[in-house]
Amino acid sequence: MPRLLLILLLILPGSAIAELDIHNAWIKNLPPAVPVRAGYMTIHNAQANEVSIVAISSDAFASVEIHRSIAEDGMMRMEAVPTLVIEPDSTVQLAPGGLHLMMMNPAEPTKPDDVLQIVIEFDDGSTQSLNMTVKK
Amino acid sequence: MNKSSIAIVALLALIGGFSVSWFINNSKPVELEDGIWFGDQSRALPEFELVNHNNQPLTRSSLNGKWSLIFFGYTHCPDICPASLQTMAEMFAAIEDPDVLEAIQVYFVSVDPERDNPEILAAYVTYFNPAFIGATAALEKLTPLTRSLGIAHDIRNKSDASTNYDVDHSSAIVLINPQAEFAGLFSAPHDALALARDMTRIVEHN
Image (cartoon, rainbow over all chains, first blue to last red; front, top):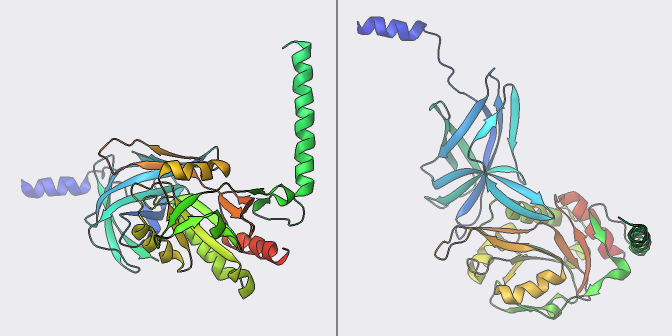
């Protein structure tokens, strides 16, 4: 019976597990006196379905959230992006001045060339790990 | 809208148009790629007193003698403030003429005095360039200065005990001339190489 279950699992059409192509994932370093860091990356969704990022966690930070810097009447403000939807066959840039990860309270002082792992959680409950490099 | 109000609006528009063209004509001495040059319209700053990152006073007279670029922000700002300071650091690296470099001073003024003391500001601004100067002051001392520069800032979503809050702020870089007058403005997004060319032009033509 366990063998049958295993075979069934293998031959059943895989539920669409979200998996993104993520490039150039980096964190802007700041001195230890400052408890926030911003993270940036290029995310490509090569799948036929949209993918929604609903949470990000990391052992290296107390919290990680997706934020967006918005210019309005010459003022910059930040707003949280609780769910980041990446449309099928499209690319989303997290880059300075726009979408970014707001990474609070590093567990250890960060320094250039550190590689810190984050875990991205999707709306279907699946996760994807990602290494981000700290840059000066 | 009746006829007389239409006439008033038309008159105002006409006056506005003349003012704009007159203003543009007077800001010609230096043509900037990335900013607005006030030229003859530069105006004196009000007196102010901030504290710099070495715990020394930073006043209007501190700005005499150099071209100052001032960015207003806060250290808990993860995205725009580091990006702007990084851009100014890259601008410094891109300016080849040592006399031009010598004539420019960059300031980062925190509009979040509750969290940004001189020690934190020292660590923060010198991370980008050892020559950058950080400063801040209580809001009642800061606001007359920022208001005179048209720089808006607003602490948002702050509960009494919370140290986790955002500060909305203008993203422009303010240009002060060596007579401590408000002489120009660079609006975001900032480009390091364009800033370097503009600052070289400004210093060399004045």
